[in-house]
Length: 547
Image (cartoon, rainbow, N blue to C red; front, side, top):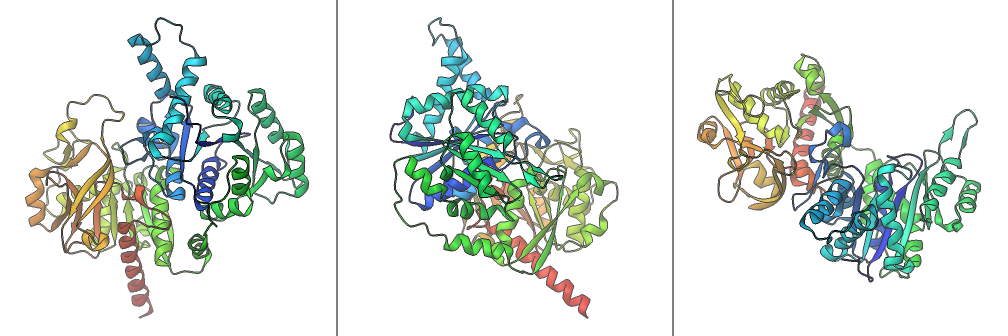
C-alpha cells in the first residue's frame, strides 16, 4: 500500500548525537499542528533488530511503553501520546526486526515469485507500506515520522533511503524534512560550534535527503550570526533554522516551538493554512504552575533501574501531572531496591511522604521492595504499587499479616509453598518471552466505597496492562478476611486488578499500569489520589513537628 497522496508527512532525522530531544521536539510540533486544527499522528522508526523493546533491558532502552492494542513500543510514543493527546496503535512503532521478519515471511510463502530479495526495493517498500498505514488506521491528516539514532548509523540506512523515496512517492508539496542537531559548547573559548551540524547535514544530503528545517539544539542561547551561518551552509532559509535551547521543563517545548514560528512555516511548506487560532491558555497555565512556588511533597520511588530515570519515564511524568493538578511540587527520591535489601536508606523512607513501587521483572531487588512496602504499611505511609508493586504488596501482606513466611511469586520461587502470585492459566505453556504477556487495554470493575472507586468516580474503567503473573484466587478469601480489599476486578470476576487495605490512609496497588494513560492536562485519578494522601501526611507531620 502506498501512502495516501492527501496525507502530509513530516520526517525527523537526527545528527551529531542521539538523545538531544528529537522525539520531544517531534511531539511538541505535533501538538502545535493540532492546535492549528489538524488531526496529527506520530510514528517512530527504530533501527534495532529486536521485533520490539519488550524483551530489552530498561538499561538498554528505557521504559517499554504499552499502547491500547497491546503493542510494546519505544518510550518516545509516550511523548507523542502525552503531548498530542491522542491514542496511537501498533503501526506507530516500526523496527528493523519487524520489517525483515515480514519480508522474509513473504519470501518463504513465495510471494515474490522467485525474485531476489534486496534492501531496495523490498525492504524500503515494506517500510513505506508501514508508514502509509498510520494515516489509514488513525485517520490522520498529518503524520510525523521520526527515525531513531543519527545520520551515519549503518543500521538506519534502509529507513533513510525509504524516507528519501517518500518525497517522490507523495510529492514535494506533501513532505517536509526536519533535521535535529546539537551545537556543542566549547568551554575554553566560550562559544557554540556549528561544524558538527554542517557535517551531519552534508551526510544527510549525500544520502539524497535535503533538510527543509534545521533544529539547532543547545544548552546555551544561539546567536543570530550562528543561525545565519547554519542556513548558509545547510542551504535552507534563515526562517528554517530554529534554535531550540534546553528548557526548564519539557512542557515548555510546545510553547517554544509555537513561538519560534516553526508550526506556521511547516504549514506553509505543506501548502496548508491554519484552521483556527491556537489556544494555549490551558498549556500556559500548566507551564506557569510548573515554575510557581508550591507546597512540597517527597515520594520515595523504590525500583531496580533507578540509575536510569528513563526506565520509569511514564511513572515520573504521571507524578508530575498529578502534582501540577493539585498545585504541589513533587520531589522523587530514587531509591535502589537492592540497597534497601542491604539495610540501607531507612532514613530516606522515613523522610518520604509517600512510597511508590513501580513495575519490573526478575528477582533482583525484590526483597528490598518488600521491605519498603512493609515500612509503608506499618508506618501508615501512603503507598502506590504498580503491577509488580501490587503483587509484592500482597506478598508482604501474606508474610507479615497472615504470618506465613513462605509466601512468594512463582516468578521468583517456583517451589514456594504459598504461590500468592502465580502464572496466569493461559501463560503456562508459552515459551516465547516477547509479546506474549497480557498486554493492552482491559476493563476493570470497581467496588463502591473503595479508595479506587472514590478516585475514579465511576463503576468501570479501562486500563493498560503488561504482565504475565497474577494474584492467585485460591488465596482471595483468606486475604479478604485478614483486611485486604480487592476493589478492582475483571468483569468476569477472574482477575484481581486492584488491591487496597482497609485500615490504612492510602495503600493501593494496581495490576495494570495507570501511568500510561496520564496526560499533562488530564492526570490519572489514582496518581491524584495518591498525592493527595501524601500531602495530608506531609501536613500532619509538619503539625506534629510544630507542637
